Length: 228
Image (cartoon, rainbow, N blue to C red; front, side, top):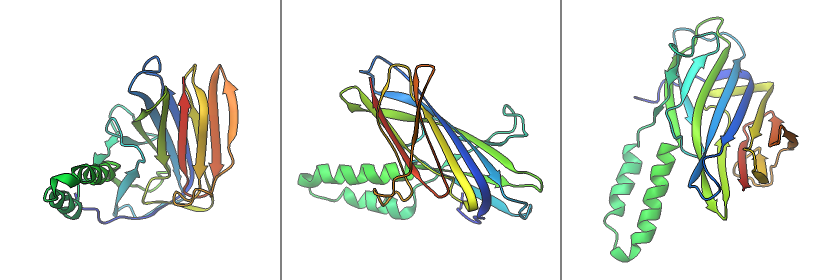
């Protein structure tokens, strides 16, 4: 599937709820992270133009993400986001790595893995936004892999590519940790390339579960780590 045409869709609000589901006693390989995001579109766009929605994920999805309009039946009208195929360019780089000397095998494998992970970190879906449609919701599941010493973590990028937050718009995120998990760090940065662009965080304990939240007006990246 070609990545064109891509139409920037103006949005006024994006709300994301992240729930971490424990998968073991702290010695397991990963937890599951369920992500639900609602997007409010600012106004009507040309209904004859297709939109390719690109979902960027800092951690690769475990299951195929789904998109749907909130007014539609979730069991019959969900649109799957398909993995973006590797380009001929990154495939060529991967092939060229095979020609390196054996002594460079570890570097070769690390670079090949990085290229593969980058390609797997995006999904795409083709949408037609009809007049009057305003609220879009998508769902996906990530893995929170072990980081050693009973510690786990994950990252999420926001918002959906091809959706442009309008002036005065905002992004809200709430992350709910499992029972028995102790928060180590939860950080949102306005610019993923600037570690100093940290956004203010709100902490709470609800029903014995640690909850953290953010609210901002740009494209933050959210990183959470915790341990048992």
